[in-house]
Image (cartoon, rainbow, N blue to C red; front, side):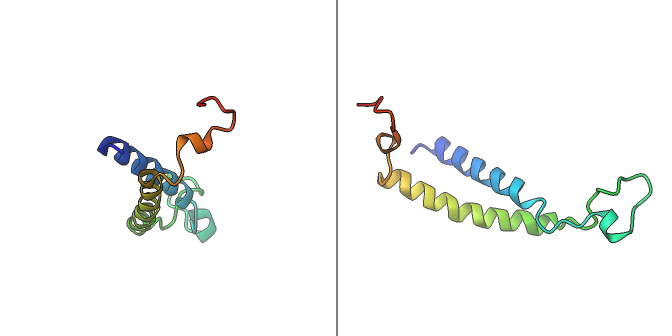
Length: 88
């Protein structure tokens, strides 16, 4: 696997996890009954973005290492995923 492929794989995993993690545990201003004037009720009350980003990064590193190991070791190859027999 080239370095560019490894970086792209990490970025895809990281962004997928980020979009999964953003709404988890989110409390809106409407939920807290503390709406700041000029903002909608659906605005986050306390996002804790640093903590979410650090957790997403840690999980992404673990998943990336697993995916990288599987790809480089050849446990699963493109031929294993060829269900239609096009590559034969």
